[in-house]
Image 1: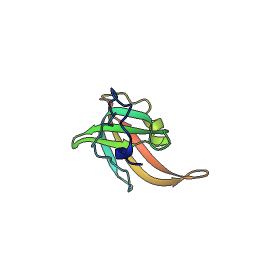
Image 2: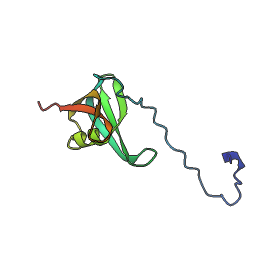
Image 3: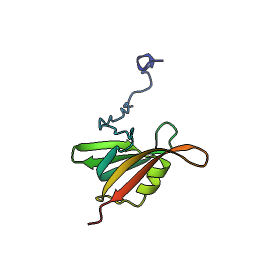
Image 4: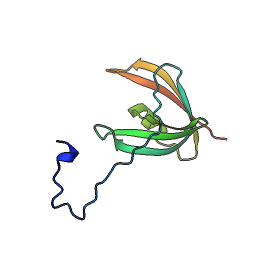
Length: 111
């Protein structure tokens, strides 16, 4: 079914909700050594296809970017407050006890 196929009868007084599109570029950690540095300004929890992911917005010297969290990143970023500068470095894929995972080191600027 297409939106155009919906009969408008009985919808008097209703207004369509149009999602706000966010055109902030998404940064992906793809190769070892990829890094991102800036101030995390927003976290959106319970998002994504299965509603169990977090997406972060970070203000960098090149502008705002977004990046997807992971179990490991979410844990390491849990205590970071707004206005703290962070540096995230991707260490590559590692083998855990059962599965492969993406490893990161996270630094926080304290001074």
